[in-house]
Length: 259
Ligand SMILES: [Zn+2]
Image (cartoon, rainbow, N blue to C red):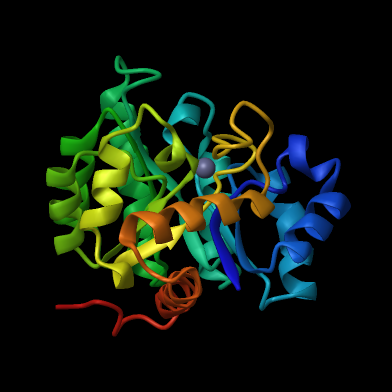
């Protein structure tokens, strides 16, 4: 059974074809998907999917750093209401992204911190988006985060992964580990303990080889998991089972990985 710990299947691009996307996911033995919602519309589409099939779908909702200029107090109040009502499985993706924009660091940090605090108060795991902002992100998490952390589509160095692994965290790998020019991704997969690892697509983005360049969807997580098994020199079924249980463990914290 395969796990896609991060997919945006309720974004417009995938939602329009959701029935077909889910048929292909089923054909490819997808047993668990976490639906990542970056706005209210995506979230309201995800809720009935979760309600109809809670074993298959988890729901994550949070405001992504790239949207920091658009997020209003009303948006934050809505997220807070939903988190406090117990409707979310994970808060995220949240974090810092200095690749797209670096002249608004204080605003990004403020939005990130506020959502970490909400996750602490509501005891929700957090999903982290971190791009060209490794030090600031890790520092803030070390200072503030009290719930389990998923480092989504990990693309940092082996050294930063070592710091991330010292936290109460899981490292999630996506399509880029299959790219020929990617050296650090495979290095990180080799160095990451299998019981601290997740697989994801980040669909509709980041399709793995051999689908690179095409629109991504959860069924393609199979290619990433096959690559993990190859890099770890492990049986693919063992990789799948371990990742599945890592994902499930996340929802049974506080015992999760806590030193
Ligand atoms: Zn994402």
